[in-house]
Image (cartoon, rainbow, N blue to C red; front, side):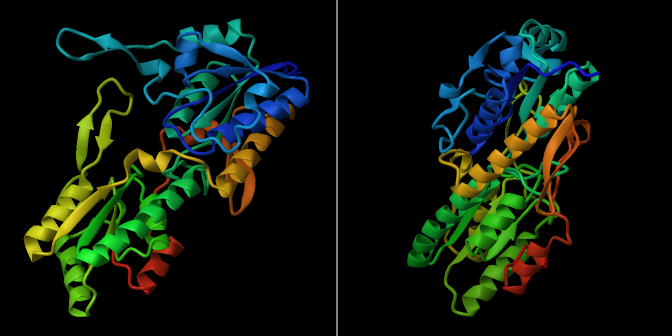
Length: 366
């Protein structure tokens, strides 16, 4: 017989994201309603490493549904298996495996299970814990919508809306000055955010990682528009987009992080190349972390609440080591280990790609 569930821990790992508080609220309120106690682990897995764990009460999670960010804090560098404890004299990071420390914290705080809210990196850490006997229930979070196993992650809808609002504003200045405006959005190696924001914002060209672009094709599409009397163009570029004969643009490397590559700069590169090749004044706009912040839209609040509720249903039913997912419009769950370190990319049969092409959107590939 499984051990009766008495106390759970909840944490938010990786980057911040609209809707995190809605999940924390749903999990905590449900748990407390059913007589369970809830421990809030601060700053993701860093809270286990540093033993920063606090009791969560109903008052702690009341009125946080509409708040952006996370009341527990987060960290995208705290992978216990590869934790940077400092920099040595040669400038290289000192890496230690603190998994055992985290397991001791889980035991000392009498946690029967963990609800881990995050993306592929968070699920990778959770998988390590699962192998060591910890029951982990995952909730998928990322504005990039790239977590394997689920059609949708909360935070994505808010990020898309933020990007679309920015594109709407950029359009007026592009039209006024007859410029090309290149709007760079997040997304890492997946083009979901650029694709949805580009279609939603009526972009003329969309550059995504899954479809390497030709700068010649990009310039030809802009020239074609100009010949048809369209004196400005909007280009939405995913930060992970790359030319057919090039590589992704890396802004910097952070060797203290388990995922050291920091993409960025594709907007500057594309805008410069357009201006150099066809003489059309071009500007870049980098939305950056604006996409990750702010109040979650209603769709993300609802999805986050559904995910949190399903996570608790799994726990109360004695189910172990699952990731809550949305597939074909229905709540489901899958083995949490299957989502570790995997990314869901835009497939070439994605209907929105065909729909975008049908209304004249160019992807720089022909």
